[in-house]
Image 1 (tube, rainbow, N blue to C red):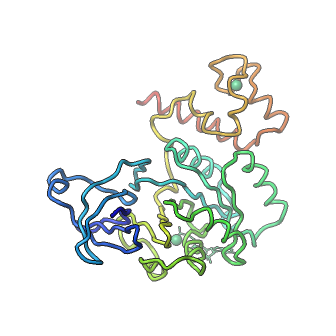
Image 2 (cartoon, rainbow, N blue to C red):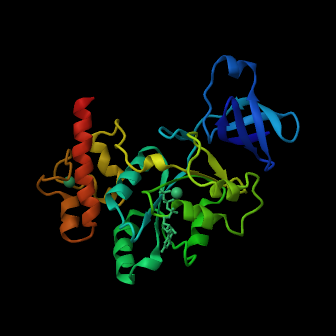
Image 3 (cartoon, rainbow, N blue to C red):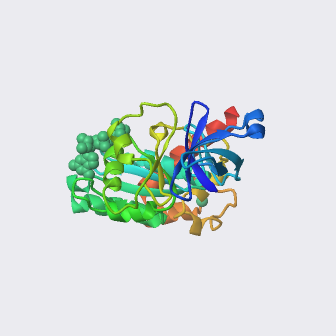
Length: 293
Ligand SMILES: Nc1nc2c(ncn2[C@@H]2O[C@H](COP(=O)(O)OP(=O)(O)OP(=O)(O)O)[C@@H](O)[C@H]2O)c(=O)[nH]1
Ligand SMILES: [Mg+2]
Ligand SMILES: [Zn+2]
């Protein structure tokens, strides 16, 4: 039977199988000898011993792999920010979108606490992020706004949740866990109530129906991936892409070169200023990293 590892713990792996059961699995001989390291998110084939235990026979190729925290096969990174209290950190959002895209993971942007701000502020944020084409949600765990829509985005996928402290990650996991989900095996609600990350191990929460979500506090402060090259960065900003290749110089980094299409679009307010400023900031970081490499 196939399944997904949701956590590893003292020599055992907990596998959520396609039958919806959670199996405590040991490693079979050859995997144990090879000292294979499996990650939460790894898709595996198991043989079952009874309805609670089994053994891992084989691991399937990984589609994506994140480090620190290590999770395999994350399909989307849900970037949670608050519209207020704390004020949204647009630089962090943009940094996480670059990080996700570089790792072939879909960034999903979610602004929480819409009950705390004005329609104008929501429009401002929408105007910045709609052109990116990234799935975009406005939610409140207090009023319930947007929660069902976000749920639909998460269903059946492996997602990681990232965002600064206090933006409402735990509240959102709780809100997502209310009603309308098929029966989950892992008793998410009990685990969520236990609160903070009592374990250092990454764990995927099972919301039923093969919907798995990792709460990943480690993503809040991060360096850009070391292997991005300066000329590759602009491709990670989807709203820039239609104009790339139209600058005067083929090597244009869209900084201060003449006849730069990106700068033209910016002057005509067709690209968001904050996105471009963060592009420039990240460009400096990428160049500095290239040098120290
Ligand atoms: N007004 C309002 N408050 C919210 C909303 N969502 C969460 N909060 C409050 O914001 C505070 C922080 O929420 P948490 O869910 O603990 O935030 P977190 O992201 O898990 O924080 P860390 O665990 O520190 O990373 C709590 O007091 C919540 O009650 C919301 O939609 N609206
Ligand atoms: Mg929390
Ligand atoms: Zn240019």
